[in-house]
Length: 139
Image 1 (cartoon, rainbow, N blue to C red):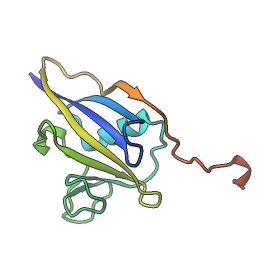
Image 2: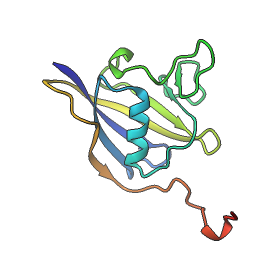
Image 3: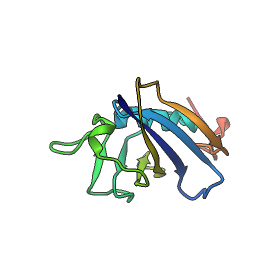
Image 4: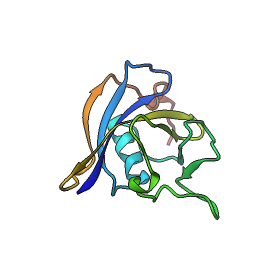
C-alpha cells in the first residue's frame, strides 16, 4: 500500500474563489508537487521557489528549489515530510512576483498503487502575468 495525498491549493489573496484539489502519491517529490500546482493554474515553470512548511514566506523551515550548502531540497519525497490531515504549508513561487499558494492537506489515504498526480477539482482562474502585453515585448 502507498500513501496518496489529497491537497487543496489556494493562491493567496483569492479567498475561496480560486482553488485546485490535487491528488498525488507520497512517493512523489516536492519538486513534482510544484510542477503539478503550476500546471494546474496554467503557470509557466521558470522561476525559483520554496515550500514553506510553517506557511510563511522566506521561512527558515523551507525546502528550496536551488538550495545552498546544507539547505533542504525540494527533491524530498512527500512521505518523508510527516504531513498530517489538516496541515497547511505553502508554495512560494517566483521571488520577484512572490506568488504564494496555500496548501491544505485534506486527506491521506492508502492505495494499492500510486497514480500520476492529477487535478480532481478546480474552481476559478488566475493569470501568472495579468499585465503582460505582447506589444511591450521587444525581441
